[in-house]
Length: 127
Image (spheres, rainbow, N blue to C red):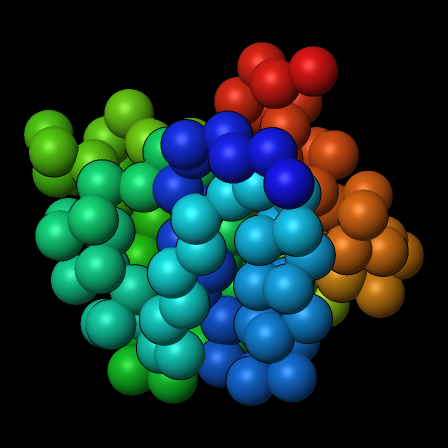
């Protein structure tokens, strides 16, 4: 197994989904941290300084857009690439995510974990 020495933070409230991604990303050589709500995700991002963050939009305690805003305001986390991963596929949500600084906006239902992993590698410039 290849270790990429890259850390991913997955902020996702659905345990089944986060577990599925954790399994895939770990198999691809990433170190994976999981947060089940927006507040915990923000805290983990500041503590662990991941290389990239996968962020759901609909989250308990603090929604994904608010988390993204907070991350981009904080000098310690503003340069961490954030990929929004959600079932909200409207153009309006996509534009909002990009305006707030997300590097990509993916709709869960239309991608496999392998495709998402590939997008993460692309965002991190990993071949």
